[in-house]
Image 1 (cartoon, rainbow over the protein chains, first blue to last red):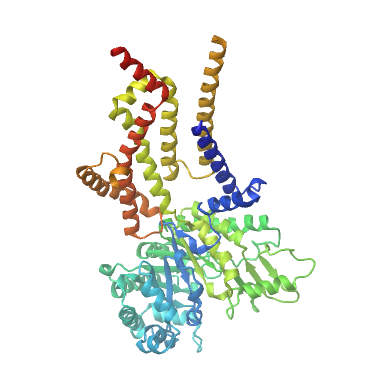
Image 2: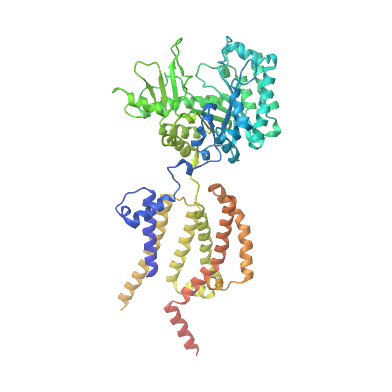
Length: 523
Length: 87
């Protein structure tokens, strides 16, 4: 009879577990001990509100791309390193006419021994680089062709691609020295320090055979000179949005072929600038339109010989500030503040007029009487996009300008989207400990038959003991499979366990009462 | 004390369980390590502990089942009836 009570107690416990996982709010769970027990059981499953509890799935790459000025303000403090595989830790703002950095201070800050000792500025980056040994880091070489000084983009890029005055050689030399300084300063393996090339606004006039060849030669030389094959460092190349104005990269298939062949990562800047494609409409409508665009972009990139295994989709962390181009009237990114901050987004929502979208799920907003437009994704929209990208088989995502958002509370929402799409809450070790124990305990039942002749004889003679023995074996076997997640540790698995216990209990009870009934009739 | 918890245990059996525990800890580690967020040593030692303990308790469980079945009233009665007949 005591066994029945044990079975009944187990059923109650498992029922609470199942109810806790299903977040059921039954009366039973709302009181005292049961409530606490259900809460504890709920806490051991694989879900969490804290992004810090997650680890990334090994097949994905998540890159944080932070502008140097945000790094220097210590934006890395609020990062969830557990959700990053790589980070950009410095920016080499390339001067196309000389090959030198336009802001030497950014490089000095990153490489100087003096800065590390005297100033707290670089401590965050230092800690990130030195303590997160498994993470790779990138130095980004960027140029947006906005050097000014009376030179047009065409002239500057032409001079650069033709390597006039050994501009490219100067760049290689500087990059080699910076890489050496960084590895020396932070005492890291050179293989951890990769390079990202972000050359934008290359004028379409340069799309002739010679310039394409010059670009390919530049990429090859850069790899050979700065990232020799024996160092195993990664080279990433950023591509602009396909349907944007800057289409040099997509003008000739040879450019993409060259990038696809030489780059380890191809980072597509998924900044959707096209207001025609995005309507002021409800959430579902936005997701449909915007996602279609993203999907067609990724499909196009795949068709252009970029393998999905190399493809990284970059998002402006929260969204973009856009403004009308005075010359053409087209919407272009606001260069002064390209990425939307959460504070600005809240301002927009606070300033909205009655005719505007009623909640924060709207993703585009134009202030009345203003030429500025603001694009932003809610956490759910971003999560949706991440999930769809995963289905397309991409390598991962890059998040640009995380530090634009101030405040952990708001930041966490967007980290959570990354965590939910590309991460998982790691299992607790105790599941595997108890699972293994259950596995061995289940062997105890057949072993007793093998080892003791008494057990063999009793089970052969008295059939009524077979059921409890088999039941014990079934329960421990189930415990083994359940704890090791072979039977999924979800509500289904719990109900399967309850089902086994109920069937066993019913069979045992039925046997007991049937025997009693038969005895009664015999008398 | 050990003999109380694990009746019939000998040094030889303990050593055998130790060796099997060490060997089986390797597949345990391979299976579990990618799924958890613990250090390599924590996973390996947990695996070893679970397998070592599990191996030792297989015998205990088998013994408990035997004792349980043999201590049933009807079994005792049947056995004593048989021995009386034999006398």
